[in-house]
Image 1: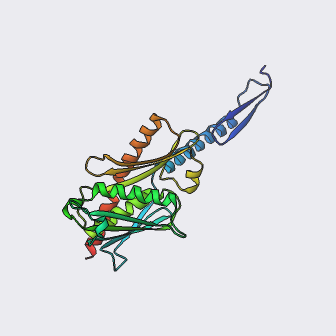
Image 2 (image 1 turned 135 degrees about the vertical axis):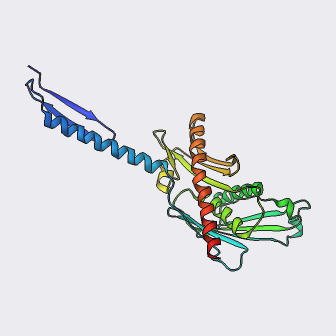
Image 3 (image 1 turned 180 degrees about the vertical axis):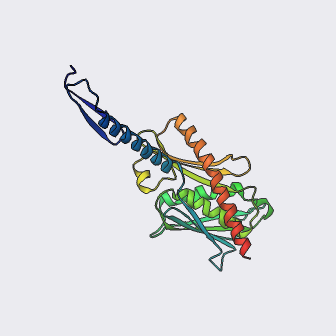
Length: 262
């Protein structure tokens, strides 16, 4: 005779209790129900992993503004940014460079005046642009870039850089290569969330943003906040590099769509 016992099956989100009677007979109905439940759970976990590992939907519009030489509005999920490019044009004497163009980036938040965090974001965008723009073709001139935040729902830096790249493409400014930014977050369990939203960023232990070029997919800029290990950094780098290929394809499709209408 089997003793009366209680088996508890633990999973990530569900707990199943199965009461075994004092009989050698096996309850096939309960076993089939448990097996079916585990299959459902595995499908649910697989779906959640696929949702975490993919980027949010990308969309863009080009040439909506009349005054800039090029502009782009890019949305990543609910995060939306508009960038405008002016120039090459006249530069102030105090900012004039003899051998290359002066890259000037201004970031404007959705409301209020820019603070220290916005200035850091502005500097990161400018450093990335100075790397990709062929400024030596336009010495003693200025290329001004204005980045306007429309809505921030996570991964703001990557959306700003992607919007800036598309605005540069729309303006026709000469570049060494294109740049694409991808953000990721590391949660408490060590899992990597691609293109995190605001809630996922707040609950994570680290948020990293990588900027890649489209020739060899090398790294242009890295912005990191939080604590992480070297192995986690390498995993984030690998996943973001793979995701950047999707962003570059998005750039190509957006520009092709605009040119096909002209």
